[in-house]
View 1: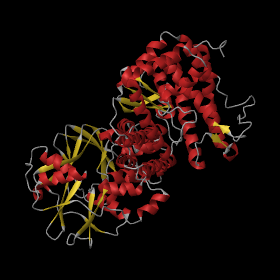
View 2: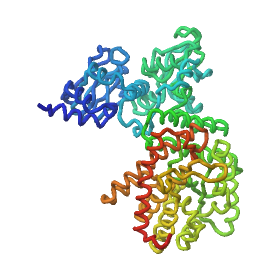
View 3: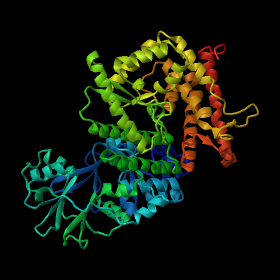
View 4: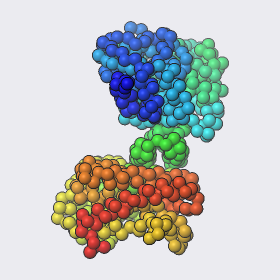
Length: 638
């Protein structure tokens, strides 16, 4: 007889990690042991100091607050809602609870016995990786990447990280401090002047007695609980957690996890009874581990020299490799690496502006084009970019353009030093042809659409995939409006784009063999980019333009949008989306393996299984090209 309650529990759990990594039969075993708990607002699940329960919890409905007591004030560390896990850290660490958990509103939670969960998941590498990540980041929420502007932080150790973890931690050796007689106002001014997130309170013997963080100022001063002239000793966290100067990265990380803190005071003998000599922050640990996006983005934003910017961006390749090895969904990987690439460009522009004799004379927009414009650039490729500046009078035009050309040269040079090669076709903002006023750009797109010759179609394949990375984004909105308004007058342009999309070389020959390059340096290699990936890119661009859909630039997202718009063709579009992601992943792995772009592949190095997977991705290419031929009447136009 079926257990309908257990089935409903399993149906709910499978939507959230790590339960989505468990097979249906095992998940049902867990669900059968789940206790369903109803809570009124204010009901307590556990308190600080309680012995850990024999289960952890998942929020089914409602919300659960986790907090600690700071005097008479409840400091909320997190509010968990539907799908979130809580209460697992104490079970893993085998310690009492450090926090209090109460119902923030009327709620239903599932209590999951740790014994059944461990028996089912003990041999699952993916689940263990998830738990390590969650344990280290103190966050079991299912969508950490979307919350509070953060993105998924990867603490999962690789071989290189294992080595790093046992190296001596690189801590700040000149921490900013204040005396016990200081006011919060003076401490906050110091923190602001030094652009730091914490300040250590020391006594007359320079021993650390407390710490004040941005969070303390926000929660205790900005809320009006304490006046700004309050002594620091009134709100500081005390006692501090200390460590000795030769602690390892792993030791520092474990101390932070164990004590739920983000800062360790380094003292002469490792105790609170000796002189403060440094401070180790959560950021320092992340930077040492090196392969997480939060640390990389912070390093990029703080970079003051190209060398630092290059080092930060090169860390992203280690992150990329780690994610691919963990089989993280490519859509997630693309979003993270795209954000990192955009951050590199933004920082390059900021640094270039600092080198210019004056600030920009008018507002402008930096456009990423091609793969970066589609937000699907994973490996280092060549640069494709352009610049739009505000319309100016004729007398100011030459000087304005000269300024932005000089700025663009500095940006392109920095990006080149970071690792993005100069574009061989010179499709860069430093080229006067691609550094124009808004009005000129609007006229340029009109010309390409209304006079679709071979050059116009070639350029369209690059310039119609754009993304505003920096500056005035309203300029791109106006260009998009111009494009779609002009397309209403020029159906012939679609035919030219369609002809270009379907004439891409086939991946397979008549006898279903891979078509390889016949001459040149790449002889006998398979061009996965031009023969497999670009036909999908071109098809998605044409179809989304034809639908006049704005703001969807990524290829797989374009196909997913088309699937929603055309249910009758949804299966094909979803197949194209899957094929694009699979091919991109394959190309990226090859690029990392061979330290190149991954564009050309030596088929002899592939296993039979890998070749079979590639062939399966080719099927939707032919089918989508057939759709283009029929929809845009290309039979007599090719």
